[in-house]
Length: 437
Image (cartoon, rainbow, N blue to C red; front, side):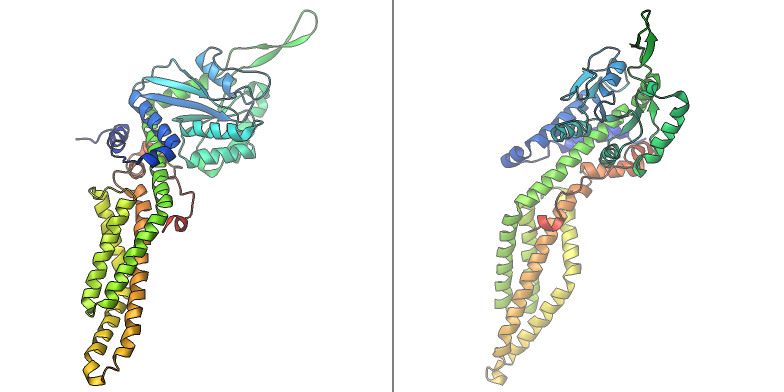
């Protein structure tokens, strides 16, 4: 029996993952915009509504290109640059198997005046788009290369479109296309520019001798054909992969938020366990009981940290994480346990020698106990930081995590690997050390 298609596996995982996402009222409030974007993407997945967004500098003809695809003047265009002020979308009347609707999304230019807010808006639209048409009207500029790299790092599928080819002499077009290919970042070397003329014009001589430009029919068939073929072959998969990327982004944001805002509470929890272990070790005369009690306290600490950070202790992911923490603690703390046994044994010898030494052997026993307590505190803090680190890691590698499925599909499915070859799971915006207690 053959495995289900990749887009069905993505949909199935997300349908199970989202209801299991336990969020506190504060988390819902603080992560409200991200959660709304995620739920919007998942709703589009359920409704099979795929989004194709145009992206590029101001004035490259993005709105004109969408109007040419629609066959009517739906999106505003003007001779003045910056006509598009906010995102807008319209349904494209193309029938694609597996999709109920295709939305064409217009965005502001990435280098407009008042560019900061508009660039953020365009970036958000690109993150919410299942496919992006990156539009040029000439050779690649430095801002365009930077925008391309950002989109590719997020795993956004791209088609590279060169508009206004009617403005270039026919003999210069091959050199233009070759120059664009040379300037592409390494991650975009596979992209082949599609030449179009969304709103071509030609010079016309009037009877009174004046020369005026007149509009001509759009020349976008190469793009229309390539877009239809691509969506027919991979449309449902692109929609599902983008939904998984959105889920992975939210999962990472949630874990970072929990680590950041749980840092002080975790620090206090670790401090209490460290003090308890230090007291226990210092007061207990038996070395083996020191070790056993320390391991029991470390395990309880890990369980309490899991609860603090909202990890479901009943799930297999939590059990695997606890196993990794125990293994790493045993490996990294082997020397510490050996020292504890040595110090504990030395203290027992000193205590047993009290009758023979007339009590003098008790003098070095106190420093030994203090050393044991200090070592217990250091080991507990190390265990706590290791647990917090594993919690952040669990957002990426769990079998039921969106990012983990993306990586697994990329290994197993050549088509998925083609679309995800530049994708990277969202990195933390703070160094890990800044998130740990």
